[in-house]
Image 1: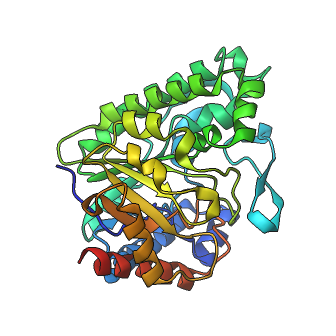
Image 2 (image 1 turned 90 degrees about the horizontal axis):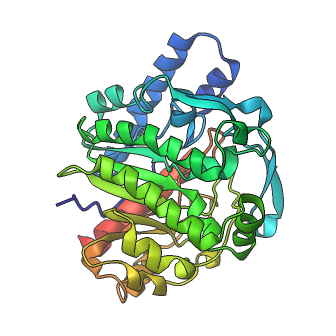
Image 3 (image 1 turned 90 degrees about the vertical axis):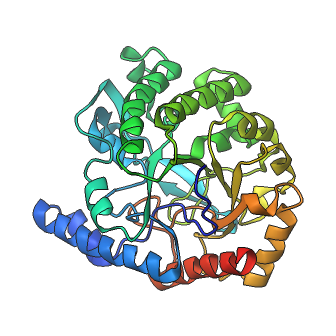
Length: 365
């Protein structure tokens, strides 16, 4: 039976300024690696100090939450990336560069996706390890360019399954290598919740959104089946965008809840419930018995602190739909989905993670 972690976090943590500076300057790879090691040891110890029982390296070696894939796989052209606008509530829209690149040639894996991360984490983690990887569904959405990618992969679907084939072997290896918790980060499911993005799927991809959702679930399930091992927790994080405190989609889980919760082959759903854009807890009624919902009630985007008593009340409200023993608590997303991180301080990051751990102890003991 998968372990139950009441206090969870999505994985990424803010990069210290000296690490950002060293990476931006380039140069000596050995010195950069040593600096990464130093800060990973620090964040592992901090997670232990706060009372977490599952540990990540903060994704401190990555440029963004999906660069473990793009660094290990040839075929992406970052010079051909397309700029996009992201929203942030009353902050309006802000330009955010496409950090993923365009597929311009046949994908070819050149090294393990997390091969540069896992050995050090295994050696130094104070407890069970969580490894995060991007969903295969991430790449067709933003790496397919008509007139370019379709000369190699005929359509979005062909690119999707090429990515799945690469991910399956790595996930199988991870789950056999002592990793206790594997989390797939899947922002693209938010497209199926938001009317403007459903229309984008029709016009830009040329698919019915419901058909695209069906294929996305099949793709992620193929990856999860490859990773399934006794004692390994499998999870999916459903995100609405997280880049420099901006977001790109809104809407509750209602439109996709029955399909998503009923058919994804995971043990844990990490869900965003940090503001009014997230909708109500009612869609949680479709979560199958025995599966865990990790309530992302604490915002990683804004510095304002949440209140532990209010968090406990919201957890109690969610327990009307999912039994209390199948609930957990986390921030709604990572603190640094891209290396630049969200617009909060590291002290506030740790304060919010302490709030998650303390509230989890208060609610579940």
